Image (spheres, rainbow, N blue to C red):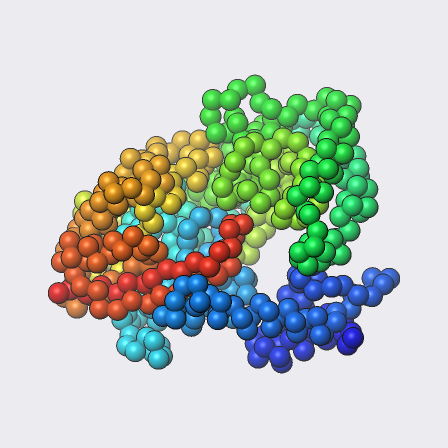
Length: 524
């Protein structure tokens, strides 16, 4: 056994893998039981043989096993498996969660000016105009701002446009800082239920006692990862054991969990005290006079309440049913509790937001962008931008759009309005679910696929009216139904190349190998 400290293991792993492995990365492996923890009295030691075994099983065989499942045409260069999470969620890209978005490095790969053995030519240059007709959370326009390319984003969802606009907006640092402080102070001075603090303090103490005995941190996770332990049955047993303690504390402090109403998303998916705090903070935000600052404060609150829904930590991405009792958490491998206040999350996200905006302000270039709310199948791009930015309109009419980089919705996979139902309830935006292309609620049957092909084709046919002659269109899609050849034909375009990439580091609990294709369309 060759033991090393975490910094020593970090240096060893960096040399072994020929890429930077930080001490935090090693600590993560210990924390989640990927490698066994050694040492006592607070001194964590790692067995380098154990660490080597982990990297060999995880890294060296992953490319082979994924290609076995998904085909040898998988382009591993586009896996970006050398990147840390901090890289793929850099600066404003993480201002608000969004299910189904791609990482910024994928956009950068195709719109920057490098070439390699896969990308043999450049498609966009500084000063070009790039379009994303399925804007989502704005990854393409943010990367375009960072790389000196003008950009336009279109989305039928008002909330999606708000997310993207908030990310792309340039803020006065001092003004925003004061506005955020005012928001935090407002919540700190508000107390709807003054028993909550004492209740949570006692609840956390009881949870700590149970978890220390039954779920001893990294040792317990390591045992699960070895595959010789029935996690589910043990979890159910401990859930039942702790539930009477939780119920007793609720009664002791007269804590009300459910709200009186159950008509809206906000009524059903938030604990009673949290709902009162949300309403209070939102009223404070309404008093902010500067519109763009008011929108950013609302985005911070939206991000906060998404994390404070009454659900388990592992089900945040796909809600199942309201969780108002303590429960075994498959993410943290211990008994966890629902949240009873938004204070901690609001503070964390407020500080994080300010930091990310400052970081992006140093990187962004002086180029134009426009976020348009509308249906990309019929929108008049020139007319819409003329109402927003006359200078950009002149450039647009002279140069035309150089092409598209976007990820259209996947057929029958996500209801894009529903994933942010809490925000629509809170902000009062009108939902336009009926205008979504390929939503989950329409399924993946023949009619749904036919409608999807027509919808994407209509978007491309409308948008290409604003293109320059030699345009490049890149569409990121998991085309398991082979619909994109039909889409190309209906759009009067041809597929000139396909880049098949593995999708790694997904947040959902389904970790099965998964790929997507970047289709390169050009004019016929």
